[in-house]
Amino acid sequence: MKKNILKIGLLGIFTGLLNGLFGSGGGTLLVPGMIFLLGIEEHKSHATAISIILPLAIVSTFIYFRAGIVSLNTTLKVAAGGAIGGYVGARSLNKIPSNILRKIFAIFMIITAFRMVF
Image (cartoon, rainbow, N blue to C red; front, side):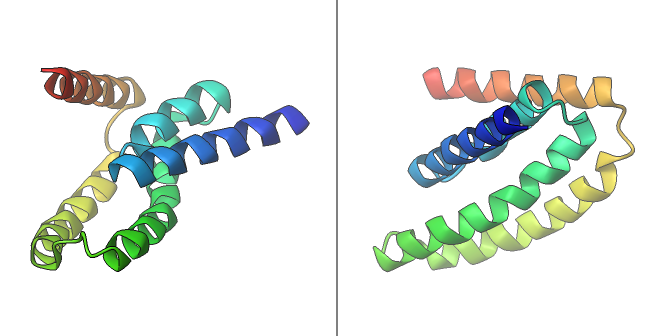
C-alpha cells in the first residue's frame, strides 16, 4: 500500500510538472502510468486522466492568465470546439474495445512525438 501511495504521488508530481511546463502532456504520462504502474484498466485510466487534468489545467491557467500570456479570444473559440469534441469522445470511450483504444492512443503518441522532433 505504501509503495502504491509513492507511485501515485510521483505520478501526480510529474504530471503536474508536464502540464505546468508544456500546457499539456498529462494524459500522455497519466494513462500509461495508471495502466502499467498502478494496474488500472485501460478505459478507467483514460477517464481518470481527464478528471485529474482538470484541476491541473485550472492551476496552470490561473498562473498563465496572471502573467498575461493567455490569448482569451483563441481560448474561448478552441474551448467551444473542445467541449463538443470532449463530449463526443467521452460518450465514445466505452464503445471502443481496450485493445483498439490502446492502439489508437499509441499511434497518437507516436505521431505527436514525431511531429515534435521533426
